[in-house]
Length: 91
Image (cartoon, rainbow, N blue to C red; front, top):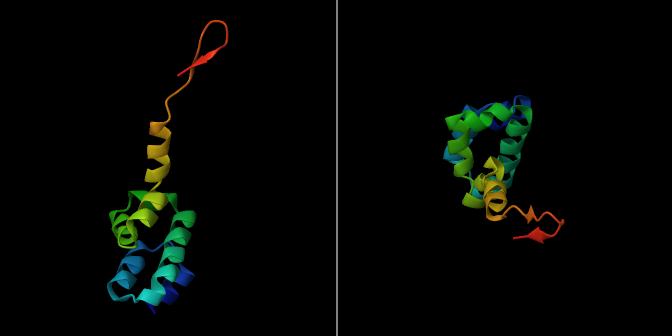
């Protein structure tokens, strides 16, 4: 019934958390899909501690990708390029 609740209203971090308590290995992909749907429907879920806790249980890489942490760390590693007065780029 909790999975049906997520299908009807994907923006329900509480239901997602409840499902994580009793999920089995075969359910992992469905839970990840539900987590993405919840975020697509409401970006404010990123500020919901229940949502963040729920997706952190779905794996480190998934959580970082979903929260945008991997994208942020890649952007920080890239040094901005500067140009000299004659237009040449320097690192």
